Picture 1 (cartoon, rainbow, N blue to C red):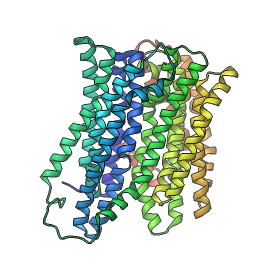
Picture 2 (cartoon, rainbow, N blue to C red):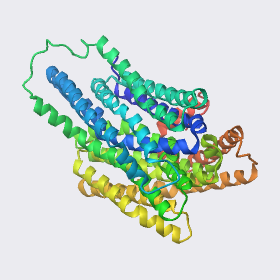
Picture 3 (cartoon, one colour):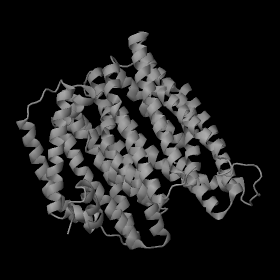
Length: 547
């Protein structure tokens, strides 16, 4: 198996993440059309609780195993490296079985926790069934994560990235094919169709695991998976302690993000029911925020996920050498890129929420309006991802725990009061939930930045300077997009019409934003003259360059 250089590995991993996210975003168009609003609510309940239990069982382990393997490999501790991999598999197998049993056996209790006293929509039995169907994935996906971590620890990025794509492709085929056959060929119930669809997570995991296992077996010698290695003096207890120490911060982060979604789902559903919304409307609003809006939000969130892949090793390197000015520069640059790229994306998607929602889920005024507000959460999620990644790279684990947990509790505490407040002020109640989530993420971001400034004298002046400058192209883009929306007619019921409408306005809006940014020197300031020149030369086939 070929080892990847840092740059090559970063590119491969980022492309895999973006490709998988795009697939995950696009499959919902035919899937939503197949299962409808009622099926979408069932799917959302199962998937959101599954993500939390998956985070409990496997979050952080790929990175932890990767760090441990890389460390032992560098020190020439080959026996310890192999034992770390085998101990990791044993540990994850035990945790996976326990978590699977908990979710499978207590599915009715989880369903009751989600639905509460809600009547007229999904039933406890339906939600319990789909939760049990998705729980089988917990027996496969965590094991897969350990194997990925072992390969990544050897700088073998392509195999784990390919397995990611295989997992997603098989999962989508299972979701779309299974739900369609269940409803339209075998004429089974909607609950059964959704159960088959969520079981796709297990099917995708099995396919990816088979691929990785076959690749590892073919390259046992290269990976030192033999029994004739010289014994090391490192105990199994020390190895397990190291794995846990590296994994826990990432587990905290992933669980906090998942709980953000789950808490929102439960609190929004309960509060809307309390405020007198009928069950169908309450479920539609709730799942539009916690699941279906999030699917489209991947367009924006994949930017931070891809960036963190290259940011973490750069920050770690600078931290090891105690070059705090480089840490400061890398963090500022990452936040600048997030703001520059994501601000026009969230405003653009908000302005075009109706045709965008129509493309994915069919025309619905309520769904489009919910998405037009919720999409702004993506910007704060991205900033949170970058700041938390920086804290983890600097081994500030206590700060990671504090900022993440504080943000989560703040969101949980504010959810219901803000929804009731917005409702009584004459606004839509769900806006209060979106505001609570933004406040939760913002508090985590602010505390992280304050802590970094206090401990290492970091400065964020360049970020504020960019925010002021970028307002000119951003406002110009908003005005142009708003004018084009007024000028160009559209049939929201036609998906083809919506695709052309979004395509034309997005391209014009992007050109306006980028052209003004270029003229103001923002592009050069954010991306650097050399890199910008390289991109312009490629786009113009070498005919234009920056002097």
